[in-house]
Image 1 (cartoon, rainbow, N blue to C red):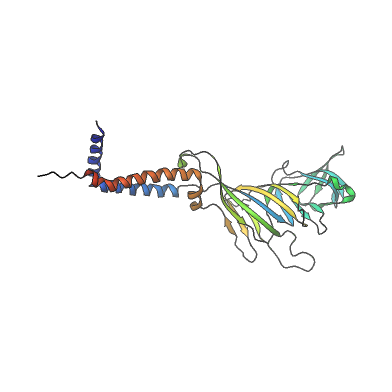
Image 2 (image 1 turned 90 degrees about the vertical axis):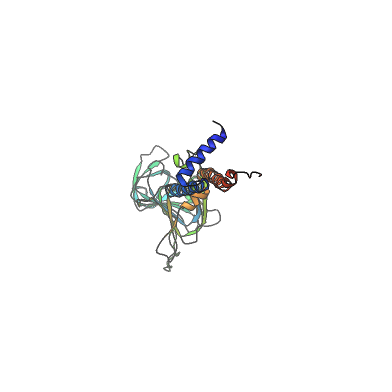
Length: 312
């Protein structure tokens, strides 16, 4: 069968179904647009990979991994527990569920706090490990060896970055854990599977948010559980504050600001996903080209099918 014969057969079939060749092509375009809308509505929300770079006065988190949450302690003096008043150097291993914190004092010295829960302190020498309970603080002391003080401290747990700004009580700072400045980079995992024509797994940048001073950032799953953060904390070079670099993988983040009871939700919307996800964009380009060709065919069909005039 020739190409002309195939075209004639398709034209006959489409005319019988829709009444005319042009109408049939427009109907196919409408069906394609309808299926496209259904496809967009069926897209799952992407998994968001967010990283934050911020300056705060205090950091607190609940440990979710025993070994990954181990904290190096050196050149510090313990304030309570079995190590009270002693210069110590070793590794503080908090229990899962324990709450720990890092803080810069007014004089710039660094402190590690075991706020709630228990922990095991392992010495660098052959001394037996000692159990510590909540309320213990390790404060950097030059007399304990300044060169032993940690330069970087780990984060592995449910982090609440910053605290909302509160009025000062006259007894000190307005809020020691206040977020002073920071940026939030939001990335998302590209859609994979049959909805994206089995595109390759990749990550794309979705948004960058400047964190307002005095705000608080939390990461939560849809079921209400706090997500796990990982990263590190370093003493700021020019301020009595801490530089935090942390990341988390969840579907949404909550940004709390002063004088606002409700949080602003930071997530990747369907609109952003449709126009930014490289795998989805590739599928849309293919569908757009097909629909454009069908529309062009619908426009040119009457001109092509018109019989040429015969001379009398």
